Amino acid sequence: MTRSKATLVGLLAVLLWSSIVGLIRSVSEHLGPTGGAAMMYSVASVFLLLSVGWVGLPDFPRRYLVWGSLLFVSYELCLALSIGYADTGRQAIEVGMVNYLWPTFTIVAAILFNRQRTNYLIVPGFLLSIAGICRVLGGEQGFDAAGMLANVRGNPLSYGLAFAGALIWAAYCTVTARIAGGKNGVTVFFLLVSISLWVKYLLEGGGQMDFSMEAVIYLVLAAAAMGFGYGAWNVGILHGNVTVLAGASYFIPVFSAALSTLLLRTPLSGAFWQGAAMVCGGAILCWLATRARRVGHVKAVAD
Image (cartoon, rainbow, N blue to C red; front, side, top):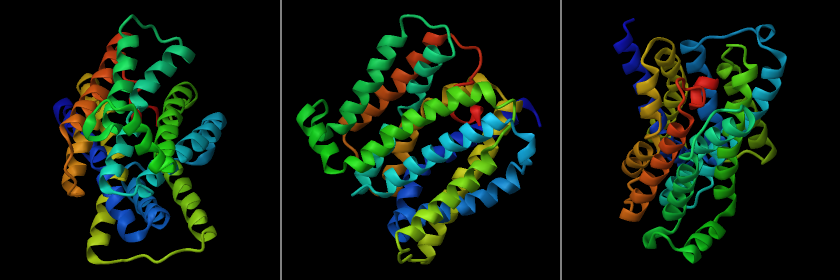
């Protein structure tokens, strides 16, 4: 495969990941937050077995298997359930935007714990990302502290899970970059996520699932976006232009909001789009602050 084709495959992963928020929400509306997520990760695990393949557990460094599993499973549970527990489509998109603080948090963690070199741009970059989230959560008024707090208090579980997920993924990228030993445990981790969700589903007493044609379509699309997204990204970073892929990945919040508003038929205000652009801009400033020549902090590189 040529470098340009591999880069295009990697860019496909950016598109697939950008659709995840809207697709997860669509599946949860038919199959429930927990049951829908369990189905998604189960089907995605099959897709990963087909695209990425299986690596025997003895081939993994033990520390990576333990810490990687714990952090990866925790993150995916936070991501799927935060969106599934959202009260409305608009809130699901907002929750997804909170989760997209992970690029900024990952770079800050790399600076604090991996001694990543940085410069003064890290401060405005971090502040711009946080300000962007505040603008998103402020609703139609934009920067509105009272409105933002009221919004979060309306569903603290969803927003809390999304914020925790952003921190957990930053920790995952920071830790596994040092202990993975070049191994990719994403298939194993997805299987563990699906098992965890099925256990939660059974402990909750199950629940009715509406397996309509629409639900099945959304389920397959969501699982494909998750599973094949990781497979496509691996091709891109191994054989494509990693600089192009790194730059494109920072625009996922905007792409995600655009696709989600179409999938969920939820109009978004100008203040929301301004906030989303600020989140992207802050992440890019943080990236520039590190003057990195590689993309070890980008989401799937650490898998």
